[in-house]
Amino acid sequence: MSGDLLRQLRESKAFDPSPDPDRMSQVHVPFDVLTGPVGGDYEQRFMDAVRRRERVALIGASGSGKSSITEYVMGVLQSESVAALRIRMGIQTDSLVSDPAEFPRLLVNTIARQLDENRAVQKIAREMRGGSARRPVKFSVGLPWLSGNLAIELGSVVNEPSQGEDVVDQAIRVLELISRSGLIPTLVLDDTDQWIRRPGIGVDPEPRIAMFFGSTLRMIAERLPAACVVAVHDDYINSPHDERAREYLNTRITLPALAGPDALGSIIGMRARRAVENPNLRAIDVIDDDALQHLFDHYVAGRSVRRELVVLQDALGRACSVTSETIEAAHVVAAIAAG
Image (cartoon, rainbow, N blue to C red; front, side, top):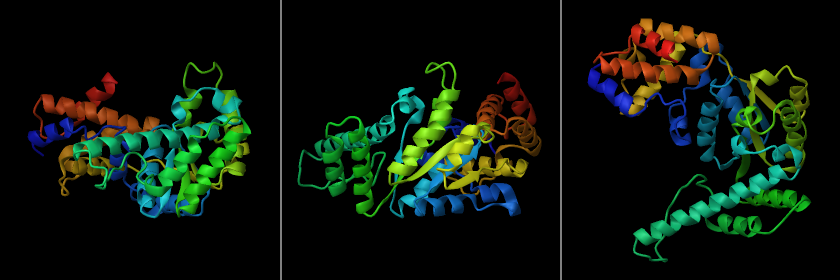
C-alpha cells in the first residue's frame, strides 16, 4: 500500500472507534464472519427477536461491538418497517430510576424533540427552494420514518401537558400510534453502562443498577407495547440484578470475543475499504502481519475492539509521519505504549 493511501485513511478517520450511527452500520462486520465456522447467527437472532417484538439483551464488555451490531441490525430492519427509538440513557440523572414516570417521559420527549428537528430541517429546505409551500420537501433526520400523517398524529399527543401516570398513558398512545401505522416501535437503550457508571450522579452505582434492571425494565416490559434492545455490560451477568432482568428480557445474545488476528483484520479491511471507497483493499494492504499480531495480542488483554481502533488510528499517524507504506509492528508497539 502506498503512503498516499495511508494518508487518505488517516484524513478520513477510517478507524474512528465511534463514527456516526449511519457509518457505524456500514462498517459493521457480522459476528458470524468474525467467529468463523462456530458462529451463532448473532445478527439473525437479533433481527428475528425484534420482528417478534421481543426485548433483547445484548451482553458484552465495553467496546465489544454492542453499538456496532445494533446500528447494523436497525439499519437492515428499517427497510422492514422497524421504527427505532434511540433513548439517550448516557445523559440522564438518577431521577430515571427514582421516578417511575421518568422513562415514559424520556420516550415522549425523544419523539417531541425529533419532531421539532424534522420541522426545522423542513423549514430550511423550503427556504432553499424559494419559500414555496407547495413543492414537496424530502428530508431525513434521525428518524426517517417520522413524517407525514404519523408525524402530525404524534405531535398532537406528545405536546399534551401531562404528569404522573398520565405520562405513562401518553407514552403508550405514542407507541400504539406507531404500531397502527404499520411499524414496529423498538426502544434502543445502547448506552446504559455510560449512565449507570457515570461519575457525578451518585457515589454508589449499585442502587441505579438494581432499579434499572428491576423496576425500570419491568415497567418497560409490562406497560410499554414495543420491542426493546438493551445493552448489558458483562459485569452484570453474575449479579442478582441480572437475575431479576432475565424475567423481562426475552432474548439474550452474548457477543463473542474475536477468534484471532484474521477476525481483527476483517474489521480493519472493511473500514479501510469504506473509507477510501476501494472494494479491493485488504487488511494486509494496511497493516503487516507482525503488526496485526501485536494488535491482536493487545486485544486479548482487554477484549475491546474500540480500544484497538484507537491504537490503530494512532499507529496509522505514526506510519504516515515516516512515510511508511504499511502500518508496521513498531508503529503499533509505540501507539500501545503511548496509550
